[in-house]
Length: 359
Image: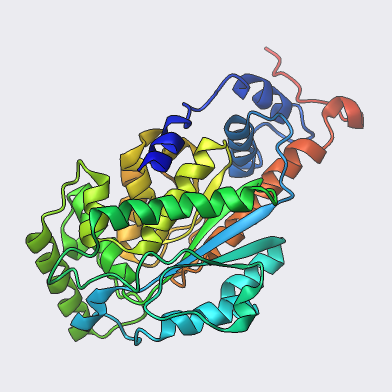
């Protein structure tokens, strides 16, 4: 718990002292004021988060964290649990969607086993893009008991912090979150229902593409888990321990650590949103360090983003996870920064500025 307390204590209120200077800089570029919309907003956010008038954007890192969920015993997913370790190997080998999109935007992917229900033992996993931070071999079935102990919940967050701190040595200018774990939309819906107070039906989607029968069962199972465990929305660790997942806790740790180092964190879809809820309820100031990549097809995602006051950049009907939305959004943040730092001013380019209307 000490590591978590230390990181939280380092998270500062966002500094707006450079806002006016940055806005003037953007307004003096060779374009009508505000004409590049949210790209200008992203540049300004990057300056405020980093405290740097020329925010670096070279080192882009996406943390794809994996964990299994005991709740799959209840038949809530269209895919079997063995898909989780299989996808770990796919990530490591560079064959997944996140690998393609991360490569497209020049980001490196860090794959983390937070709680996969199998031992990842392929020798190829000794590569630098894989980290073993396993808390346990999957969570318990939250429809029958708490998903994990309180100690495990804290450890999952602290392991996420540890991963971020270790990778920071290699340089991180912007971070993205991603996930993998069969059953994790079920846990995310339970977390979202607990914190937002919204009905489970409004927060539950079809995940990997489940049937109507499975969907209705999923809603029933989430309600059962919440009734049994009674997670306390005023205690984020309690919520995570009772209805969460190890990868969800790990991503919360990444978010907290990123904010403590004044590094922008781009959050992916619904599972990353649930992780952000955990981090937000541990330290509300993290909200200002977050950039919402997109709005997922998962219907609860919009509710989660609205709850935290985050406006997504993209709406592409994505529901893969892995950090795919984060990768695409990081490219937009980079575009905004490059507009601010590389575009000529009216004076530099010898272009006439806007003529004030004559009376």
